[in-house]
Amino acid sequence: MSELAALRAASRGEADYPRQLQLAGQSFQAESLLRALPGKRLVVAGRYGERPAVAKCFLDARRGAAHARRELEGLERLRAAGLATPELLASLTLEGAPLLLTAFLPEAQALSRLWDGLDRESKARWLQRAVGDLARLHGAGHGHRDAHFGNLLVDGETLVWLDGDAVQPLASPAEAEANLALFLAQLPAYDIPLAETAYEVYAAARGLAGDWPRFERETLFGARRTRLAQQYSKAGRECTAVHVEQGPGRWFACRRELAGADWETFIAEPDALFQHPLALLKDGNSATVIRTRLAGRDVVLKRYNLKDFGHGLAVALRPVSRARNAFAFGLMLEKLGLGTPSPLAVLETRWGPWRRQCYLVCDYSPARDCREGLQEEPRLTGVIGACLNGLWAAGLCHGDLKASNVLELAGQPVLIDLDSMRLAKDPEDLRRGRDKDRLRFLRNFREQPELAAGFSLD
Image (tube, rainbow, N blue to C red):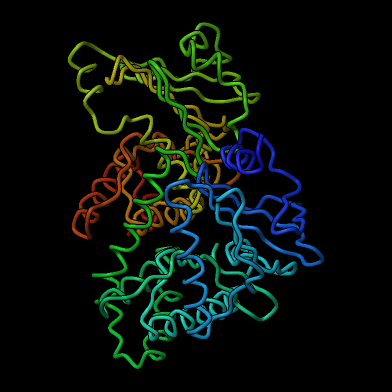
């Protein structure tokens, strides 16, 4: 296998990455995999000669050269605007595929990895430094369409920007504002003061008359929705986080880290697991839910039953199955820091192009109905209320928020049954969805008004 073919196989998780590459007469010793985008890019850290380096390999035969060119141009634009970037060591090709070598920063860490461990003062400091950089980049006429904490490295007291491929010209002030909103949209939606202060710092750096209420209402809401919609779409295709297989009679997706697990028997005969479950959790008309062993762990397996011909036709024609919807939103809730059993895999059986039976696999959680927990500890109303308010602040509506779909584990809420969850289209749609969720949830506590008031639901 050629070096390039080995790199492409490694990007798809089909083989380990090559430990040595010959580049322009000098050896690159690969030591660790940093990122893999199946069939498109592979990023590895190692040594180029005597220097610690990062090799970014552009593997797409049709568009790799264009992406590499944009990467080089973008890094130059970042530096020209006064932003720190890794030093470019070399621009090479490997069997015709572009490859960029940049300096490896051994002490640097992605801001995304540091964020949860930072105190509030440190979060505000790094956030304000980032929006200050963004203001300089916008002032130079360019934006970063993938500006998120994973593309920012903290190296001592320096903030280092990555992904030059995402740097593009701005056509108008509105595009600059939208780019700022996309960056701020990664903050928790319920933490308004942090985002508002960052917005004011940006406006002052650009010499603009800031209007936070308008920005939050008109621009930031849309940016949050865009960011979440992108996350949702990635759950249905091959990407860094998700592995997808499609073949005759089936469509299957699982978390990338579980791609090597033993799924073959399940994919071939998913109903066989329902014959001898560890426990039958639900045996309803619309769904059957069991606890079983799969992929080397205890899981909850949900089968979405076809009730009759008409229902089967509706399932076949639905744009997205309820199983895939629950899988995508489960991954999203994890990113938002909201409790839910980890979604592991989803399987859709097909007859030609038509969808038939669907299955969802989640980690088993020993969580209990929140009402049981509230009987023992009424103060759980506060954390449950914060969880639901956080859900709505992110622009999400559960769609079936009965109390039995809010579990409790070790004093923390766990949301389940995400089949009907959706992303609100606009603030008014969110208000309607939130009101419906709130009324459905509080209906379980009509005879306990003091307990209901303790949830403090927005």
